Length: 271
Image (cartoon, rainbow, N blue to C red; front, side):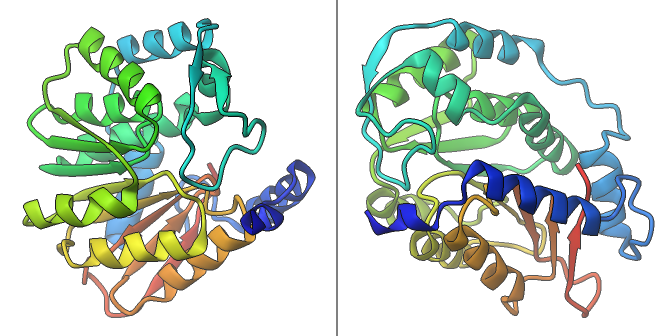
């Protein structure tokens, strides 16, 4: 599989993080002239609004971290950095595939702050980030897509345990299910793209989502510095003429379309 040659090693990633940290704005947002982006930094990244995240979702995470059950994994994306085997322990998936609490909390605050009505997630995994977003806005429709049936079943059990009623699960290859899903939706307010970490699929999803975006839509891309392909995709997305603002916090990239200013602005913020 040729795409693995573009994945950065742990040492390379460390060097990239140091470079990002040196170049990024401080967490207080000093030097940001856009009121919208300043508000995003203050209330979403720094939780200036004081949003209290749900502890029950983290209890599910801890349960998954202790679960040594072996399951069959169908991986349709760019694979795992640490283990590409087809049979894995749930605990191993939880350690390597779940977004850490620090970043899951950012997604929670994003949804709390902007109160989107339609959220779509590419890559359910065990459902932790899904649960954070669904809990943040119980009135929203949260659609989450997972390519591995066994992982999707575990996520479904987690949603049941949390009593989440606003999550719709879709199992299947993103490329096969996304066109049909999007045809059902008038708009997409928030999209979290966490799967198939390669250039061409990432750009294809971006362009498909453009047709459903509004002035207030937010696209969130995971692992934007994970590989050469993802960095290339992130760079092309930042330069797209319909994109107005981007915020890079290294592990996640946020894309905004607001026409607050005519000048395109790209920010790197320490996180």
